[in-house]
Image (tube, rainbow, N blue to C red; front, side, top):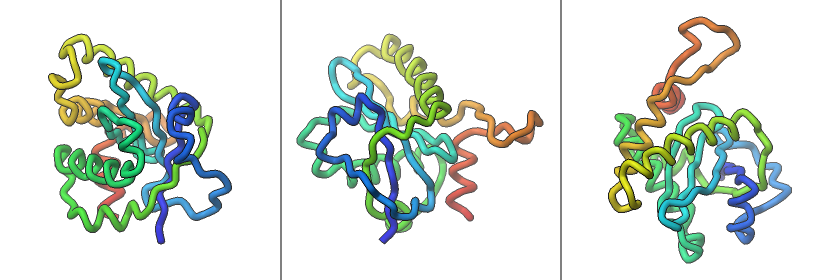
Length: 175
């Protein structure tokens, strides 16, 4: 069975110790590695999960310790909703087979992803002040704003090396 690997930040790793597995030598899933970190809105835990290949973001909101047993399904549901919101049409069964199972792994120490996530967290922090509490934050829209920010993929500095996470995810899923 396919497995999707999600590397957690040190902060998130401490909160979800029971989910962390080590020694996973399984082949990485079709979408590559994902990276997750935690942030807070009104003392509620939220997760920012970023795909390493496409820089596509997903935000899980108000995650409690009781949700950890069903976090795999929560991730798939939120990812599906975000893909639809971003105009990437795919049926849930296809997405479910692409993701497969999920393995939460210790931190990957990928500095470029950490920097990218920190940049996005600063934007989210700005929006926290604009919208107030979590219930008033349009999470799908805010995530869409993160996913439409220009990113650099490739080695050169040509304009064709710049894209956005939505286009990269769309290209990946339509291969």
